[in-house]
Image 1 (cartoon, rainbow, N blue to C red):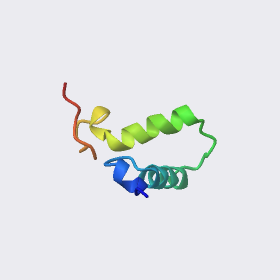
Image 2: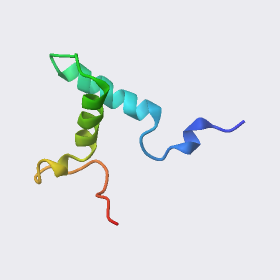
Image 3: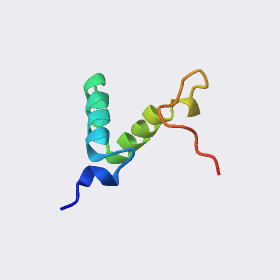
Length: 63
């Protein structure tokens, strides 16, 4: 029997759920659709994309 946590280096279901719970807890309006939550989650991870003074949680993607 394989351990499901071995599949995920980043963005395990638990990690994503915790980030979204913190986001929903910190906002007054909780009527976000799934698309908006995905965008917010992206900016939580990659804050440097919208504010160059912020440090991103994940390293930048280089091709």
